[in-house]
Image 1 (tube, helix red, strand yellow):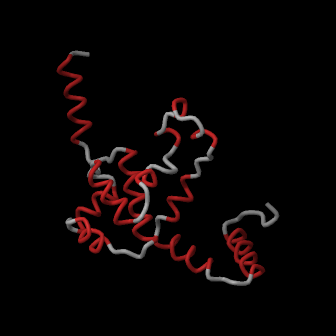
Image 2: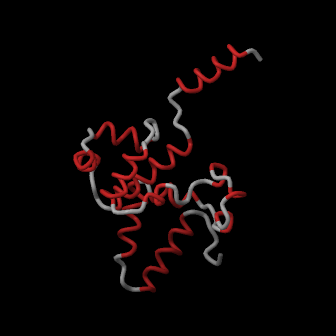
Length: 152
């Protein structure tokens, strides 16, 4: 492959609108925390001096979040900067150079579910159930509806 071909490949890759996987993950974590706080994109944007469209692009991973902006986000959302990288899919993290990272199971589907409106609403409603027997019944009902054996 010639130098020009390599440059063309790089340019087409950079020009694509597909978000970088780690940028998408960080954006998902921003969205998760914002939703957990019950904060709108408009309100988060106001705190950061951004439009809600810019916040949307950050949350989708289309726009990369710079270091100073990530620091501002951590302050506004009340989490450490590391929060945005927590639970990153193992294929995005080189666990050979990060001791301990490989010991933690990567169940990203849980984070993805909690990042949805339904997941957040279900979680908030579930924790309000005071009776442990009712909570257990709800879990068994959801397992049955999902086709999972309740004995598991």
